[in-house]
Amino acid sequence: MEKIEFKITINATAKKVWEVLFGAITYPKWTAVFAEGSQVKTDWQKGSTALFHDSKGDGMVAIIEENIPDKYMSIKQIGEIMDGKQKLHDWGESLENYTLNEKDGKTELIIDMGINKEWLEYFEKTWPKALDKVKELAEKPDDHIET
Image 1 (tube, rainbow, N blue to C red):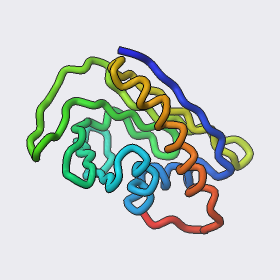
Image 2 (spheres, rainbow, N blue to C red):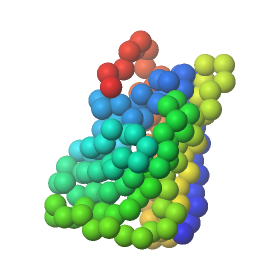
Image 3 (cartoon, rainbow, N blue to C red):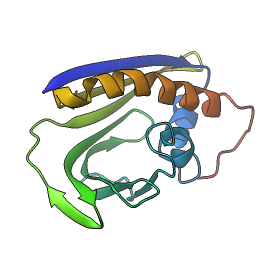
Image 4 (cartoon, rainbow, N blue to C red):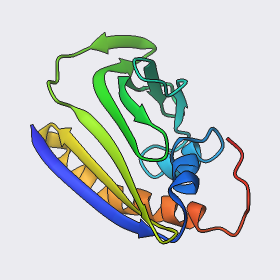
């Protein structure tokens, strides 16, 4: 298992960044960088299942390990969805963690992950693009983001 980390500073409150990351309208916008037509089915509550799908319905199965609003989200990948069927795996510490640290109206967003080595190059290329999209959405002058 490889450990990777990405950081970005966003000129927005942690609340707004959180809404962009996990809002029903904005989540598909920034995650399209990973998979066009990206969607998630979850309530984001600790212990809940999360089903991440691309436009073909393939994707990942995860459990929300922790949810501290506007501060920290931890998602544990536990399986995949292929051709409409779920296949669970024991990937160990395959966690995707979102940490938000706000200071003076700016938020440092830190993503850290434990991933299989075969995915390292993909995520090293893709996460920076995804974070740029989160920044773009969060820094829009809109006073309200639909969630």
